[in-house]
Image (cartoon, rainbow, N blue to C red):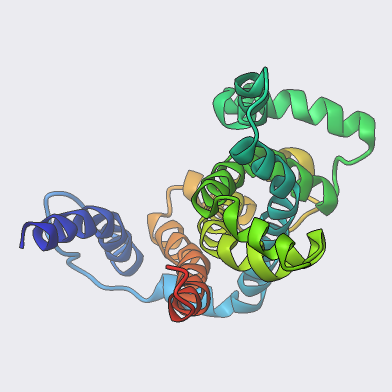
Length: 261
């Protein structure tokens, strides 16, 4: 009973801002201390419908580079995560600290230093540069998830497969990868959400060339038109919530059917 009560309080805490945004979206003149808007207006909804092609394209573009970031993070984290989880060596803490540095350093400092490197490498103002900078910035989240996955898996499964004659690639694809799916799904979800909601890095490295929903949304947030800003912000929630639902339906239920979770 206490768990359900606590869960309800947490849900109420997180749902509260969305309810306020919905109030602003349909009630442009809503002011404190009114509990509900005096006048309802569908202007913001009509605006979103009139801009549906543009907004849909921007959401797809943001989802596209966010998925690419999650996939690249997964590939780049596999070997380091296996090493950190299974091997003990001198300087391990230092190596792990360096790999986690993008999440530990101040975002502004990291961003300005990364921009200089990307300009010299010719990766600025490009979608590839956006994916690479988001991968660097999100790398620690996937790394920690995969390290936990490798630690939970242990080495016995791979050892048994090797004794039965499986090669390294076969062991990874048929033994380790299915067992890593829960950790990969958890890390990939976090990386996707970080990349999808990132504004500053996308604008800094993308230079306005890479279409992004956050770059389109920011001027509305800075304006005095709360109704449009609230409606566009609520639309921003559609992709992450859809992504979470897709992970729940495909990855989580699939793993549970196979007894992995």
